[in-house]
Image 1 (cartoon, rainbow, N blue to C red):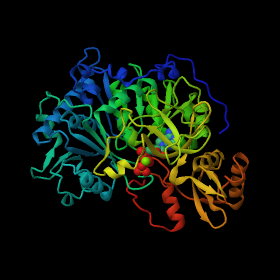
Image 2 (cartoon, rainbow, N blue to C red):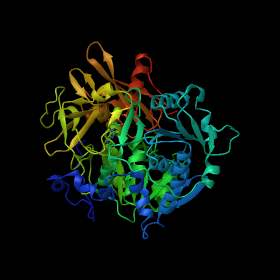
Image 3 (tube, rainbow, N blue to C red):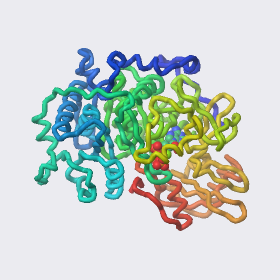
Image 4 (cartoon, helix red, strand yellow):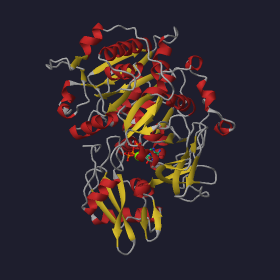
Amino acid sequence: MDMQPIPAREGNHNLPNYEKKRENFSWEEVKKNFSWHQTGKVNIAYETIDRHAENPDKKDQVALLYSAPDREERLTFEQLKNKSNQFANILKDQGVQKGDRVFLFMPRSPEFYASFFGILKVGAIAGPLFEAFMEQAVRDRLEDSEASVLITTPELLERVPEDELPNLKKVVLVGDSDKQSDRYVDYYVEMEKASIHFDIEWVDLEDGMLLHYTSGSTGKPKGVYHVHNAMIQHYATGDWVIDLKEDDIYWCTADPGWVTGTSYGIFAPWLHGVTNVIRGGRFTPESWYETIDKNNVTVWYSAPTAFRKLVSAGEKIVKNYDLSSLRHVMSVGEPLNPEVITWGVNALGLRIHDTWWMTETGAMMIVNYPVMDIRPGSMGKPLPGVEAAIIDNEGNELPPNQMGNLALKKGWPSMMRAIWKNPGKYESYFINDWYVSGDSAYKDEDGYFWFQGRLDDVINTSGERVGPFEVESKLIEHPAVAEAGVIGKPDPERGEIIKAFITLNEGYKNSDDLLEEIRLFVKKGLSAHAAPREIEVTKTIPKTRSGKIMRRLLKSWELGLPTGDTSTLEE
Ligand code: ATP
Ligand code: MG
């Protein structure tokens, strides 16, 4: 982690001076970019799509550039406006009202996006569910949210236990089905009939728009409730951090079942009126490089787990693709290993910019701006209008370089407004005016923040506090190691010892010598106390479907304890 800072490249970036921007900053300034400033009422769907569709210079621009192995489709802003109006009419006919929860359980597709905006246009609250959820996960979320309408496909409907969901009144089916009661609405038949004109439900900034269940890395997923006001921060970060310009072709790899897939797969890019690439289908390094090459992607937002797979696939295959269109790359979801940043510079010729935020924060909070020096391993600095600090358990700020709770001063625009039906849980996030993230970190003398681990994951070994991220990052620098998950294992003498689970790159065989070599590699690179005492080779590292290492699961396996909620576990 003692790598040299990587300076920014020359270029015309939207935010030339982020330090200056912080001075006398007010979010009111950002609001001026929206049309609702005149009306007092808003709708995020209008600002995202319709505003561009009503602009003669923009209406025919491709908004959605959809590509899946078996389907390619393009929708302009005007087409997306019309389709979402049609869907809004369908919902209205079914009696959907402002504030109702309408859930989506389907793969990424043009239908998904038309439905999503249709939901927002009637003033309802959208709840996107990841398509790979199994029955239990679907039931928990539909039950908790008391959703009244579900949009799904006939295949996925088999995972919806309808008879156990009394609040669910209507099911919109995208695809052919023999379901024949008026409980079921045929998407294509009704869209055909529906008018492309719809009077948007104008709402207040504080009215609800989205219910997102968290990734479940640390426990049972929570229903995080967001309001239209969040668009202020989606817009601002799309400008300052994603650096979007009118003619960009942008690709965010996250599924809209996770907050990155909505805040940055939907809102930020379209608030800025750029062409948004949506890719369906499974991940392979080849297909991802091809997506950039074929669509001339200029700005790319992805996650460490994906970047690590690309690193493992090697630099050689990169040469088979023309990635010269790319100008800006960002990462979120987990700590970005310095190894990956080095790979980005070597393989792509670009820095990868880490961004830190959570479902609960609704938008980016601590970031690496395109114009700033990157210190590999650091998540960067807080946005203008965001105050971040390291605090102790009483809410006192800690001095630089001391590890503590990463906290944020209440009041940024995209903050969650509730945990659905769980006020106690919501209150538990706060100490006085501080929102406490549950992550531990420190801040250096220059104001850069350094992620150490989730509070639950920090290891206490012989009186030293060790963050698993640091050890994992070192482990994957070893050529044999593809992925690593590190936990603390109770030990009578040391409190905890460090245990590492690793997967091996192709061509390497598990042996005592190799494991010892890896151990020494960490010891030499980090310190004796951070070197894992135990290393176990496994086939895979358990991850959430949003791509995060599930250390709590490694721990319960190791200790033979019950595994808790695993609804978001990847197969
Ligand atoms: P749950 O709250 O259900 O356990 P989760 O916290 O994984 O799930 P998300 O809201 O999707 O659900 O993830 C937010 C968390 O992801 C952060 O609290 C942090 O631990 C991690 N994270 C996100 N971005 C970064 C980053 N850039 N660096 C380090 N950690 C990150
Ligand atoms: Mg969390």
